[in-house]
Length: 272
Image (cartoon, rainbow, N blue to C red; front, side):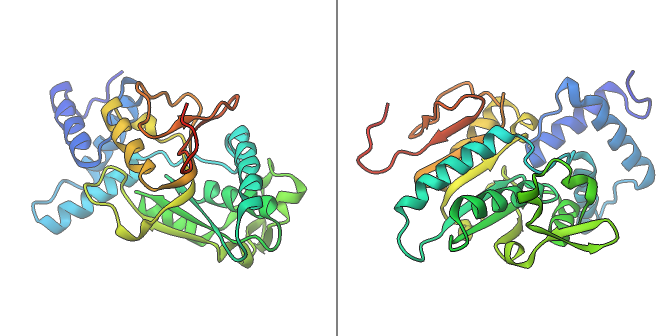
């Protein structure tokens, strides 16, 4: 049943505004959630006319709308794939040469931590790496930076993976300082017209459970821009089932079962 606070025509106008502002597409499966959040926001805090207040209002709405559901090692096959390719890359690294990993759409930080744990185990104690986590939601990034997780959130981790955490409160854990120092967070909108220049290039980019928010054209644009930040030989790992309607120029699909990954060929490598 449609939420009573908004007529269909009014909701259609708001949906168009959402797509133009942040690029998300209000699909039928997402419509009831958007209606409920939007109506609550309009009742609690009517849209102000001043530019500053309108900006704050839209920021609050986006933070409420985005469903920051996440977990450590949410799709295990993807992290098993990551472990394999990092071990391969370790063989070719020069002394003191490090790897860069990006969690695009990191929510409250579980995926970024999972990348760091996988890199630590794959590269060994002397391995050098850094992880960048980006997200559009300011509250989600605040939780990621605080890096405090309840004991239940760690239930799915192996004893080896749990060893990267330490208790910091009653039934609350956080990554140990050695791993925390390798993870950095940045607010970033993947559909923004300009991306920060200092993002740089990466050996691995994870962008999982995020493309479903966007219509096909936006998905294609986002993936193309992510690929421009891949180093030669780098891998882009999408969520399972996040189908793209067309091939990704300059990348080849990695034939890994249960994993949706694409690789930028190294110089001289044959493209198939």
